[in-house]
Length: 532
Image (cartoon, one colour):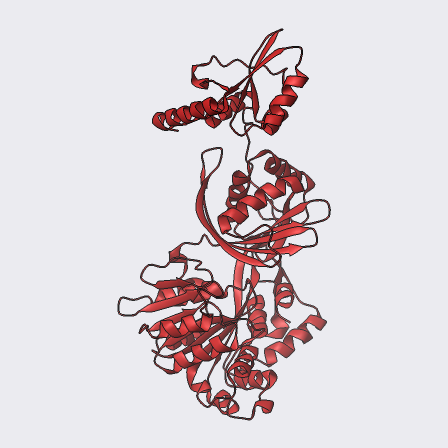
């Protein structure tokens, strides 16, 4: 605290002491000697009282303007054999004394590690570290370690006895620590304050944290998190998604698109109008794909506007508008209609969630805009039929749709440790059905010479996986798909649309996964874990 501000605080404290008819002491003028036998440290915190002096006849206490009169009376009764005096000291003076009575313990922040089985010693050590540090440091440390481990999410889960902390790494959750509820309340308070959510809400909430914390070690940690909370039977659960990627990560080359997929994407997004949907479950990389598309289109001659809840990455040159459910009485669709009047070339809608937004986005795609969004659906064909349910049978629907790209993430095998094996006859028969159903123009692996790979392990990588890759399917408006969309609604099914799209060249996510497993990029078990 600057000297002039501290002097002002002392002068203010002195005036308050005079008004209360109590003595005042400027702790800067005192020789600071500790009297640890008079009060335990815990009581000094609880009562806001400091022993300033003590001998066999006399005790002098330092109190603050927030110390209760009841506390003063109880201390007089408790030390009735002594002459007790009470001096008001400033809050800054109180904190200085407490640092002497209770000096901060040096915390050794160790790197968190994960393994295929929960390692009790590691989890216990991390739990003990978290119990010793202040709440701000707990949050910064967890985010720092999650980012180091390339985790996508941090889960804080209330259980009967304690709170479990898990990191999601490569799509799989790993326990890293357990917290006592008393400590968790402090951490939850910090998270709620930073994310602007309530710890007492009876409903699910969403928030965002974007700030820099400094650990007790003076190390700075930058946080960029999406925060989701929900009340459970044992308390408030929290999931924090990390968004610390750099802008140069969002390029099409980093999406792992095949040559055929790249040609389709590049051709579609160069059109000045139409709708592009990226579909899949939560955590399947939809937002990353959308940002890569936006970053590719981000040229000086284009005006790009996004509607996001929340804005997850800041992109120079793009007008990004945060939308939080309903803002000032305007629905999401109304905000989209307002954006379309701003003469954009490209509009990105964070997610299509309702019928009104779907119809407005479709209208924008038909009136000279390229509209891109995410959508929750199990497959590209399922997304198309769900959109039809939302907007109704519309002869212009097929004209508006350009591309529906569905995706899921699977773990990539570590090339240094993966182990080859020959599949048994039962698995060969299962894979042969998938390979035989591939579109005619796609090269098929020889089922009789097929080599698959399973994860190995090493001291550096006990899981045998390293990073993730996407399984994709791209549904475009081929002539056969367009004709199907003209049929009566009761004749348009997800299965029929998918069959027609495959017949006209679409590769399904399952087919894409089997080809990637045959190429040694991932394990076949990963494909069936993620894709039906």
